[in-house]
Image (cartoon, rainbow, N blue to C red; front, top):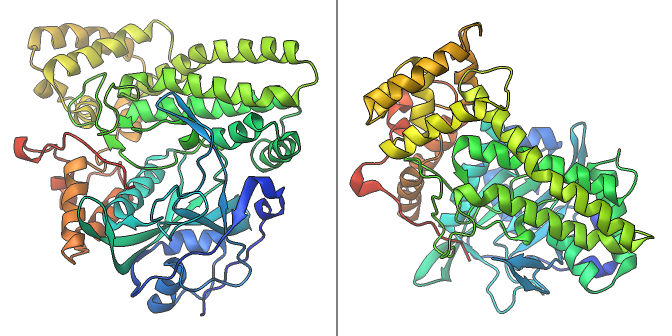
Length: 472
């Protein structure tokens, strides 16, 4: 095999309570669908010149030299309910690489069962593999902190879900796969040695300026507040914000039933398993505060004075909603061309969102049209819009070229649900052209390219995707 990966596996040197070494399960006939060469170059991978060899490696059939494959342990609150042990049930961390941009994990997802599979097959079918590849790379291009996609492979085998479906493996890259749930499982087991080692590893890897668990918690809160406000500004719905799907690094992780809104509704839900709307679009800020409270609880055993820790942690958790609100205000004000957001701008922001909701206007197109002077075309109440427009224009009257600011933060293209579903259907039938077209177009989401005009359109009535699904 020609591919060389400069592994340096710090997680594998942590206490054994944090993971279980295990190997991927080989597949029958791996076929490379995509290999992200720019990302490979960033990671320092060399010799990636043979698709057949790459398929063998990224399907898990061949283990590259220096890898230390393992499945990570974690627990988590799933839809608010505590599950004391989860872990990588269908993912295996191959190892880490150190680059001039930091340290990154390389992980196979869908590569077979692990000790944490809980009677699952450890496999992924092709649809979720391609969805995660497209959406995570689109999020990166949109400027959102996210895991990345390095490769996608067909396995040549079927996996059994409701029906037999073609299998796939995605290779995921992340600054780490440490989750809130990773801290939770050690705290729940009173494994202070493991918890201390994990904390010190996470600080060194992600927040080296943190001097104690309180400042570490604050750093994670800052990252999460920025992340969720960014999601909100793009109409993105994660769909399953369990604590085991919340990365300490502040990256978007685990693209299961995720979706971008078409027409705006503040409590939009797509996930088929979110029956009560816990993770609806408008609930995401509240949920991330709740998740950070669970992290705080898990960090308490690291503090010498429990009462003082609870008091101090409670204070920073209670301050988080205001931080989220400020980040939200800054993001949405920029979409209105406002470069110096003030608290009173929330009235203007909410006014536009209300107009959109009442008009069932497309989230992405409405903000893009506002930058181009044609938002009125998307609104059903012309008089209400004209009144709002007058206030808005007065607010941005002294901003030089507000349209340029607005276009820079309001994308022309997003990975729309109906296009993703069509792409998956084509790939299942053996046609990967729609997948490659989507990934190429979404690499430049803020540019208006006539060749991709169709990808900017919201779905027709018969194309609307009403529910999205996990890949398990």
